[in-house]
Length: 162
Image (cartoon, rainbow, N blue to C red; front, side, top):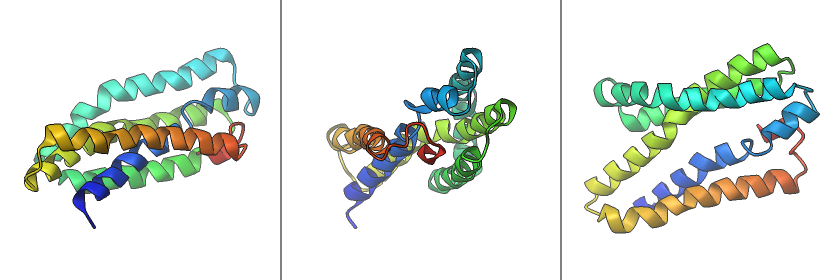
């Protein structure tokens, strides 16, 4: 399979996973789980905290201890477990800690996927400045496709979005 196509698929699904729940989560938490506005805000706060804390730590792990591609796969497998468990939870305390755990493993994968893409393109002698932007735009398309899919399937108020 063509390396550019494989990286396009990687970028598509990297943000597809995020788009599946990010926009509709607040409505689900308030409408179905009956969380208060303050609780919903705390859930979304975990996204910012994980974004600040984890990328540097995962970057060090990828640089010193584990191949970045394998680490990316491992983090997504762990994330899948968190998301599956998240779809079963209805109380705030459990939901807060599980989504925080999920975001701790997911948020660094965005930068890691870009780093892997850059590395693979460089190894294959591609001009990264010309080749990467059309690949990366498929991440945004993946995010949008996930949003539409969740909406069209009627899952915006359902745990199925996870």
